[in-house]
Length: 298
Image (cartoon, rainbow, N blue to C red; front, side, top):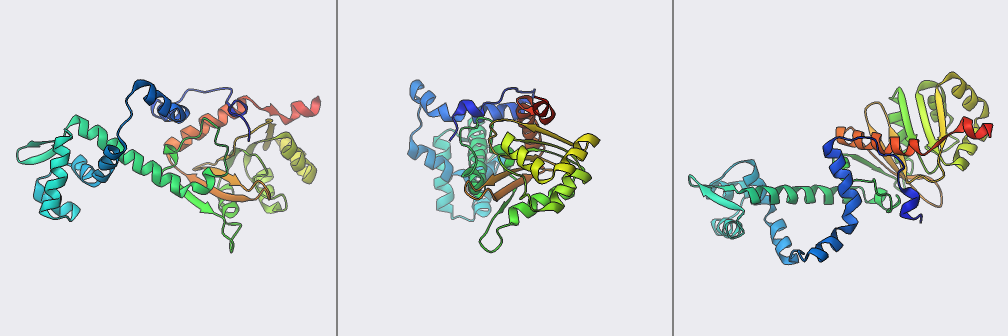
């Protein structure tokens, strides 16, 4: 496994405050435990569990203030359960009663937002498990939050090509395509895919030198012609963290089997936050890459 320094991005173009905050959080999260220990502010695990267990009622009150009967109906719980839930929230200072209704305090709103974010991120991690198991864990720029609403396509024994088919279908629907990858974006024998890349899209690809060389050896004439026409730009970088694809409407991430080199999972989304994140990461990787023409001249 490569060291963190090998995957450090060389250039960080400006990002929106939201994406910058998400990425900074991704970079810092491995150190949060040490920071909490140093500050002496570790939360009691049982208390954290209690907060999560009260997530449904917190979420209901985040939408609007409710009286106890409305809480019972919304959560489908008994009067005794509703009383127990709201009593605990009141003891924590998360709610207050205003005009016979319970509403969240400022503290309660902040806690609710964190509970919902935690739930969304954990759910995303479960769905994206196959991808997270294949990408380099040291790549500091990888963030979960932009991919919460993504489509996850996983290879199965009976349909091992599902991720590659999903990826190829998105390429075929796009007029422009940029990406980098640790291996070939699609198996070299799928000539229809490469014909689309060479002739049907305006493509820019970043590979490791070995993979770029194999592509040129397999399709020497088509690669040369596509580059000469300005249809294709090839760049290389010694190390790449995973596979990233930027289409006209969507962005995607690919995870590959180390032994076979075949795509095991492809995750894609049209989230604006994910696109901004992908554009930023791609620009960073590109800034630290070399045009294939420059290497050939040397």
